[in-house]
Length: 109
Ligand SMILES: [Zn+2]
Image 1 (spheres, rainbow, N blue to C red):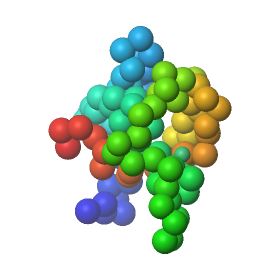
Image 2 (image 1 turned 180 degrees about the vertical axis):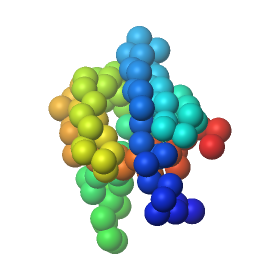
Image 3 (image 1 turned 45 degrees about the horizontal axis):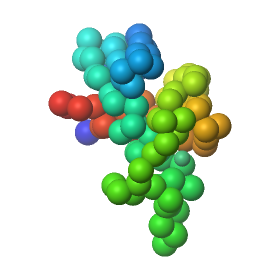
Image 4 (image 1 turned 30 degrees about the vertical axis):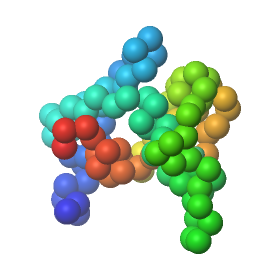
């Protein structure tokens, strides 16, 4: 699905955080734009603790109820060309969301 020469186009050119409404908008280099819900992003946290590792189930699933802090995004840190690190209000910062992963999560494609 991801072609080697497609990599640069899957890089964000703008990231807008709307904390009040719990939304994050990413505009990509290929002019595609995605509007993410912060609770959805937290639910999809790719770290081993949340999503599990090997045969061990993660702490987070479709039924997990989050606190307000857990779905408040304190900070977003770019990880070079790889993706983004999200720092959540409860201090959780293990989730490294690659650009390819974020692009796959894009609501509406
Ligand atoms: Zn996590």
